[in-house]
Length: 302
Image (tube, rainbow, N blue to C red; front, side, top):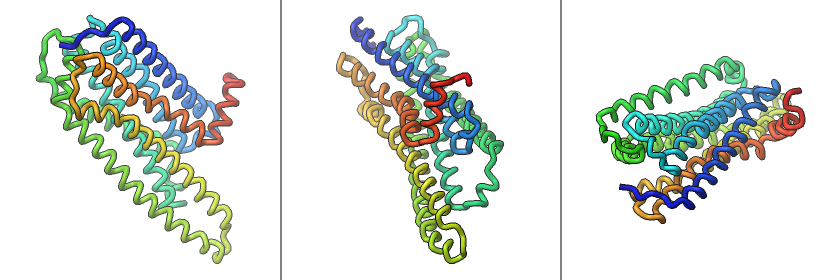
């Protein structure tokens, strides 16, 4: 059994959660609207970023709100097998979408640096949309498949928290495998991208010998390097924000006292906080997006 939270604890946690939900919705919604509004920003890279913003926005609207209902407010009516599996399903879906979306952005820059004009000739907005559709399809299929394996769990009319605890125990392998795949693939891509960047740097002197525009080549390489750094910062922020929840899951605390309740809340809060950090990273790292945001705020319907 889990002890109920004191009223003051519920009020503080609810306020913090509401602020986070609002920040995620406003930040990611603004970024998505800006990219959709200005045609000059609809590059392949920004389209992929817009998809990540959409994922974070929906995650705040659905997953974060559910979290506040069943964990923070401890709504007594939020119980039963269907809601237990549904809440876990949304958590897994948005986590998978988030991870795959970041990997796709990283893959896009790796291919752009490695294959240059060959990749530029192949990549189109249509192909970007197809790629995003595949990300959603794979995420939905993998999530549904993992939930089917949990269909034998039956705790009757127990509260969602009890169902989630049992589901987490049985689904640790899925969660661990997903994170391990993401980290491994990201490390491999990072190494390949670093190697591709070094090779491109070696080619720059040859452009001068071939009477090509070395200035443009260097400028394009610097732009790609900045984009890569932005992606790495986004991934690093995501991993850093998930450290507390990994520690909480590893320790296996059961929230039997106020200290453990707050530790659990802070752990999950940090994990969700990564969705609020992404728009800040885009705003500070992408000058064109920053200018577009200012223009959009001045005249949103122009």
